[in-house]
Image (cartoon, rainbow, N blue to C red; front, side):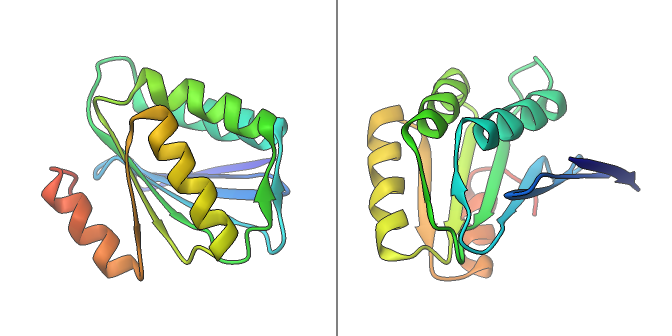
Amino acid sequence: MTTAATGGRDRTSSDSTRIAWDALSRIACVRYALGAVLTNEAGTFLVDALAGWIGVDGEPFAVLADAEGLGGTDAEYRVVASRFFRRHRDHVFIALINLGPVIHVVAEMFRVGTGIQLKTFPDEVSARSWLCTKGIAT
């Protein structure tokens, strides 16, 4: 894992996941290694990073994830991630781009199972536009 901070943006990465947090906009931009299959370790990495950034005041935040090349997720990853996002469902918005067909189905099941505000988009511009309608500055 590597971590860096510059000008209101924090970055951290693991073997499977890179996350850039913009404190001003409260958006975590997530990218995955080509072919990554997300496991319990990746879920814990994501949750720990987000928990450290979002604080405890219930302020809205967003995750903008580019799933291009993502190979899949396992059950343990989904348990860790869903537990975290359920706790924050009233103030988290997740925008996903570049989903393959299998990941698209997994994301839909995740949305239904958690009740979170999650949408898929064909591109980053559309995703950021939706986040603006939710009060997230992009």
